[in-house]
Figure (tube, one colour):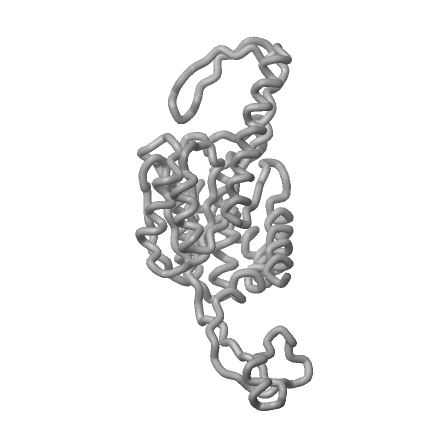
Length: 293
């Protein structure tokens, strides 16, 4: 991408993203993630309005009066964006490719983080680690992260989720909030996902394109796998072919969903052409309800 086009795109993403963050996402992010980084500070007498769930029943029994535990919110969290740059991310049947959507999602999350005084880092991967940017704060740093995603020239073409997840566990020594942004067109990553989810608060964000889920009606066409380069003639006019393709894609998606649930992971499904801000807000609300239960 030439500098003039890049600057224009960066500016557009920044304006759109910061408005959404300021109006909608910053508070949602704070309630879901900032509240997780708490350290015990003291016990004090109960006051009207205190949450009864914070009552320290042991101290209350000893003192014969109600006492509550007081926690201090950690001053900052570390957020890691782990973004898939494989060749399949260049596909898009709507007005944006999955890679462009990934960049905008990363921008939304990064601006939400710095608005709450958190640090943000970035891991870009394909079948290798393409780029690692250590966590920092500030608008300039966030703009650098978005630039890295938009202007990347990946050396690899295939998706290897193990590579991104293993690098995350290597560079993030302390527990952090991590977002794994990918289309998850990959196999055999359960073990790496399990280890990363155990060490970090890991949230998978799965990107989907409608044309990858249902083939269009038509004639015979030559299609190419963007990651392997393999070419295949496909009869789009065959209902049998279209049904088989749809069932394979649905089975893969269901298997992925089962894996996330098996590992007790919160996750987000984003479909190209739909309002991903609404999807993120819905996710934040659902997660907040689960944490409060």
